[in-house]
Length: 161
Image 1 (cartoon, helix red, strand yellow):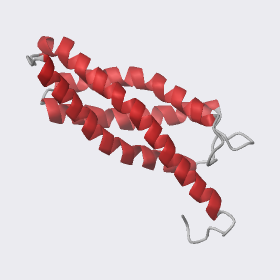
Image 2 (tube, one colour):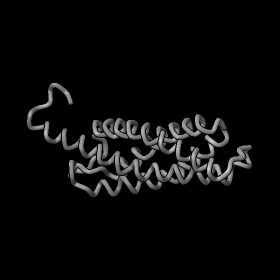
Image 3 (cartoon, helix red, strand yellow):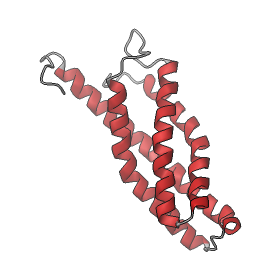
Image 4 (cartoon, helix red, strand yellow):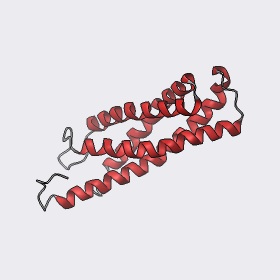
């Protein structure tokens, strides 16, 4: 919050911050579950094709490690992404809600940032560039749709807006 924020703007700013935190938490639940499932399936079915010969238990442990690490990094990244977009007034409707173009741009910018994060984490936990790119690449597809739906759902929620 700027030192130049008027007293009447402070409740709105606080509401926007709470909204950003709630959106970050709801998205993180969806995103973490998606990463967990995608990483497990990728390691289980593509792993042997790319030289990773681990059993289901090890694949589950690796997928869990990626998902837990992502839980931490993505909460921070998503909050910062959301706050940055709150400062950009482009394509807001008259009632203050996001228009479809804004939702699309937010989806694209978030997906680039988030997929880079997941790919890096997958590489750190597997040591395999092929596994990391596979997990990160599949995530692009699944999460684009999930994130867009998440944003549209939040565009209908008036709380904190």
